[in-house]
Image 1: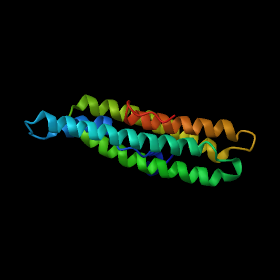
Image 2: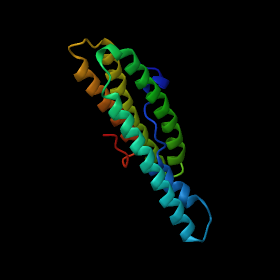
Image 3: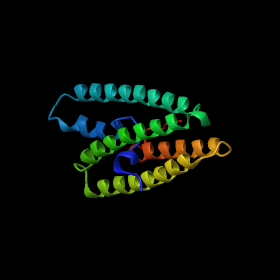
Length: 154
């Protein structure tokens, strides 16, 4: 089985989940400040989303000869998404137990899918490389999306 660290994928702090909690967490009576904060966070999320999309697009160029580099990249993204899961999970706890359960269920399914894809990528042959790489990228995207419905990485 994949270690906890290796199961965790991605790079974006889930502003879509944490943003509304953050924006509403202050006792500010000035709605303009909250709206400005929301707009700034959305802008930051869009910039981060573009960066991640570019990284994922670049990762599609890994050749079979670069398989080890690809696997290291996937593990790095796993670590980053694991950190993101911990942060999002802590933020969602403030909402409800149901939200925590839904997040955990989505994450567990996506991380299991990623673990299987990673194992397949380790075993890939030159002939199967493109298909296995595509499946691994899809699993990364699914893991990212499990943490944020508003973020896509295509």
